[in-house]
Image 1 (tube, rainbow, N blue to C red):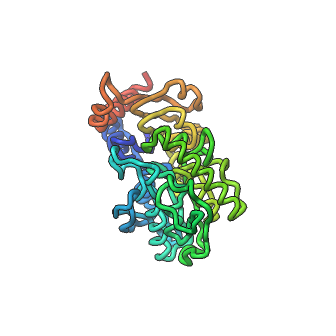
Image 2 (image 1 turned 120 degrees about the horizontal axis):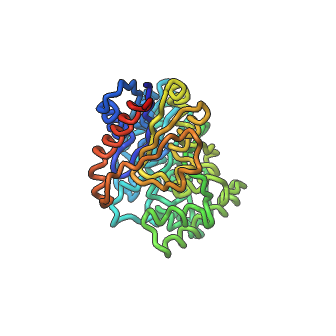
Image 3 (image 1 turned 60 degrees about the horizontal axis):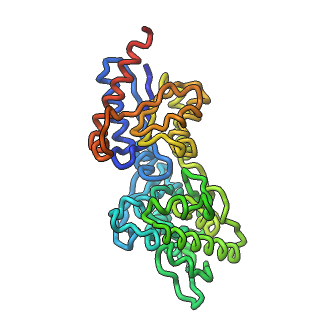
Length: 378
């Protein structure tokens, strides 16, 4: 049996590559003569460039850039095999895991390093930059990254704003005259897994800032700042970004790049699937195994697993999903080719215990799937 293993990461416990390894180990231990092809996936957030690198899409390059609170961090970006395209992963330099939980502050967290990575890539002569966003610690509408590219954000006294989304409340003017010639003429693409707008009840501040450490007061400040940013952008460029679908991705960086870099916003998982030619691999498979840490309503709104389900549905391929946490009400809404959704948790335990035992739990569940497939004719 030909099995395609293509999961997303189990965030906080296993990378997508590690999930692949445990599923493969469990299947092979089951005794079935499986022919396994493993393709680690991501949807624009953490693990995006690793997934592309492991899939043979390009080479990794190292850089030292500014982290979310101004510290220097090591980061990587990918250059495609033809040298034409760079892929920058926002989480590498502005990701939530880079900040200890007790120091998370979306009022101050900054995207400057994202712009620095773009400049590093442009210096290598690429024509196109794909910025994978997701898992960010920031809510600054991309202001920091745009500053690194030479754009100035000024208050009413013509002074540059301080880093972080909390300062956007004082934005009075945007000066694009110093925009870096390195980036001029480059095609900029934002790859995301969400469709939330910049502002409003479903916007970047109200939906995502609490996950980044914001309380009620901070959410209100960020919401006001992002709306202020949208107003000044409209005055400066004519672009209406407050309610555009996907503009709220990664603290609003998608909206900022759309308005000031003329970026296109695309589905992160569709970009990954196209780049790795996943359609060809799905066609060859008898069974597809995928999964992520939690299967819930967000799974069906642009996440990697949703992309896999849609692709497999087109070709009538059965899918087995593994997850740590499963909302079984959601699984009733997906296509008939979803063969099973299985939680890997084997009994009552804390989240910390589940994370610590994740490799064993995934392998054992894959083993059980393999045993069932072995006796599928019974």
